[in-house]
Image (cartoon, rainbow, N blue to C red; front, side, top):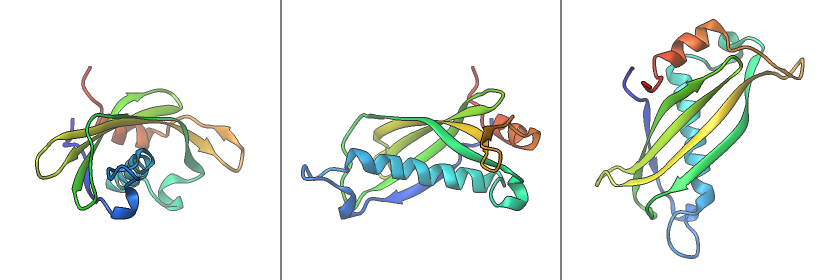
Length: 138
């Protein structure tokens, strides 16, 4: 497996809630940014690289393990948990960058989708090969 792609996210005050910690909804934005950067890292962005294939999110989840606060930097690492015929599952680990404290873990099941035809499509071979490089060993 290749090294997990990772991004740093600076937590802004507007991403916190009345309790002073990061709002639960903000984690989904962090994971979305990590997914976007993941697809950039594997070269699967832009119509010239994707053709008619795009993605649609079938499911997303997040488990909150510790609190994070404005001014902290979170490290988000992304791996591939499962690859099916038309969908795959990305897993995200969010840790506080300075201390290494695990803050949250999340996932997204992503389906290859052709918006012109309005139907699911098989994962293209080139994408499948890239995903396999980040697949978590069983």
